[in-house]
Image (cartoon, rainbow, N blue to C red):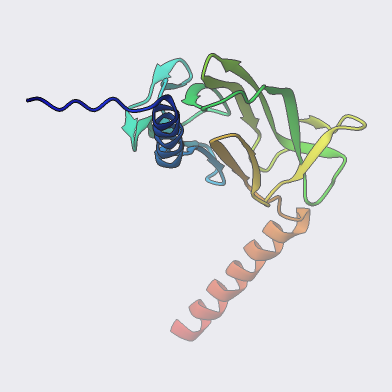
Length: 195
């Protein structure tokens, strides 16, 4: 005699819901980190982009569940393109442009971020660019623009993805000169003591 077990349609539906919940619970959130605080280079990091991530057209290596990694670019502009898994419908965002206004003169900006997020099936895709002059102005802030402050981390997010951008703070015009004079004075005192 053989026994067979056939789950009811309710049991199958419950198992499907549980499976989807477990899948969503185990999904990793994608992350982007752009750091332009080191003058002359931009550090770009990305993790958990299951559909891949490219920086200036070059695919990044693995990081976590999906593609990513980190790299340092000796350039003032980077372009990035990444796709990550987003269960359910999430829509899109953008295009968005954020101007990083000088913390000394808010009428000018030292960096600019642009990005757009689109839905691709059960995935989301971000395409964007980041340009910086580090501590130098690269233009006037347009009227009504979205503004972040240079030197203050700026974060943004979307379903299953978060990002942070760090830019260099701008020194007051006289600060560097005063620091240089202080160093020269200290060197002069040291020479007099040695003599």
